[in-house]
Length: 420
Image 1 (cartoon, rainbow, N blue to C red):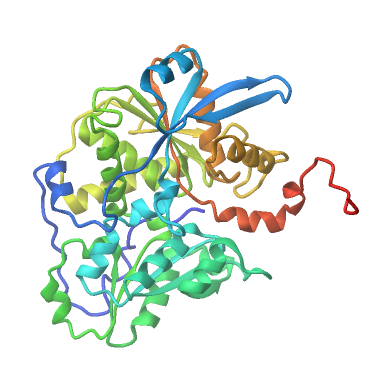
Image 2: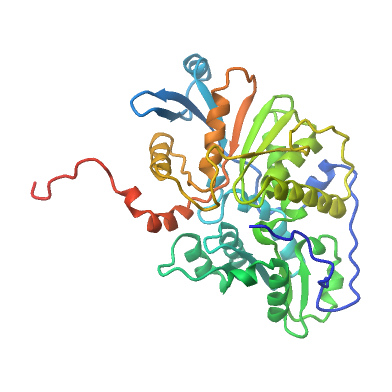
């Protein structure tokens, strides 16, 4: 899943020549957030509290979600000695395009609209939640989405692949072509733009003047969005979430919080850590690595931060890293490492059990990894901090898994006699 983050030097900024990219400097993060346009009407996300208790009969844990409306005193009395953690329910942001996908597009989508983009080109796996989300949002904005999906079309389209086919213009790319993502995206964007079109990478339109596009003579303005929306502008949408979570009505800016998030490209984990750093929050952020090596995630972290500095020119506070990985966040393996996309025995059944007990849907490839770490940290009596898992969505991915692991969804209890 390795990818090139920024526009390669060998690839031109646009299909026309003479464009000059100018970036505005911001005095503070508050100014940047207050002057930016957003797609989501509010940064709000519901916060649910999950209690954890041993389940001797099954040898695992049982879970329960505290119900809304419970009296605060009764709640504190009842769970004061019970392990618990919190879940930021970003999976509830949108019926089809939610989770960290919506956050990473929060600042990007207004940018596309402001600069009159006619087409967007992006890429992802066959069941890419990012590609599907971008297709849905672009369709809402009357922008044509072009999706390059890795591999072959499934025999039965379902899950995010089905959403991509419904809302976007899908082209399947061989694995050898997909391995060179940046070149693949640029070549396809030029094809979409045609001889008179304009091609830009997402971060390169951050501070272009509207007149530069209006008078460019381009009939089509095509914007390339990296796999997973990995870009400086994507980080900004995630930082907006961190600002909300740090409000006094949520976790506050003085509370010790251990934030857990699963990491595909790692953009969301970097965005949360960057937000905590710039806001001066005493938070520790852990990204659970799912799709690449530690070295690759560390390099991506550096590249994303450098791109953010280049685009927004904010002053960063000096801070000595307290993480073993020597960055602004902690990268860890999931509790049971495996090749990306592999599902271990019993994991789908665990997702079903958790959904039945808490009404929180998880998937075994992404969010279950973050859930397991949140459970482990909540049981650590030595740690006097709150534990927060950021739910990254991805629920529709279970539709695809239901085809591959259909037996995992068959109830094991006795069937009712059909003759009764």
